[in-house]
Length: 234
Ligand SMILES: Nc1nc2c(ncn2[C@@H]2O[C@H](COP(=O)(O)OP(=O)(O)OP(=O)(O)O)[C@@H](O)[C@H]2O)c(=O)[nH]1
Image (cartoon, rainbow, N blue to C red; front, top):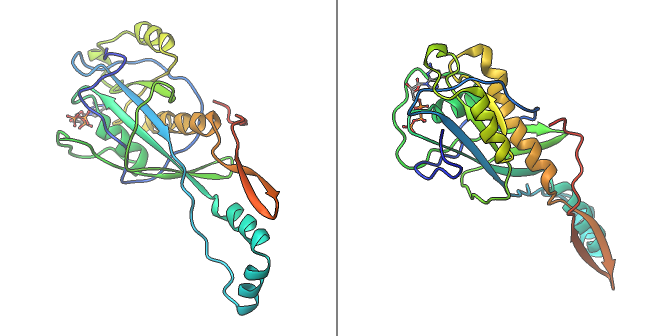
């Protein structure tokens, strides 16, 4: 099994689709000896899609005379999509590329080559009505949600790490455990759940939406929401 903070490789899913939300824990299966466990870590970022408004002269005039109100509504409109950066870390050949490809592209790649450096894929998903996007880039911090993934569970006769050991490791590091196969199409939902779980947890962890818009002396003051609220099942 890999260390808690594997350093030899990091990878950010990018290139295909997005994230979904899902639930929790995993089943158990394991990889080859040198492959062991893939750890997915993630961090959160915030993306504001700009929206242009006021195309007519009337609207333009309104935007001048009612700048505060327009600024407020523009802000609300602009908060459409948050970007979560998910980093897939693990030993070489464990299937990081295939897992992210399965999730973002929906299939198992016919051929992969050892990734040098960092590979990016991205996929937009919707959770509780909010669009979440992965993003090119990564930042690892101890506070970000992490899950532990054992890939290649289709290789039943080559299991290297017993499920109970993986579970113990995951528990001790406050991670969910997923045991899955990027190759087996029957496992695709479980692969999705890995990323959806992360997206859900990221979404719930700390909202960066500016919900409280206060007016003070004719000026708009934005208050960053810090409360964690979610109906996400994971
Ligand atoms: N049987 C099986 N093979 C897999 C699975 N996932 C990946 N592989 C194979 O494992 C090999 C390595 O897969 P990659 O996704 O390139 O592994 P990686 O971790 O990205 O490798 P590096 O780029 O070297 O770090 C390839 O030959 C894949 O076809 C799986 O779930 N089951």
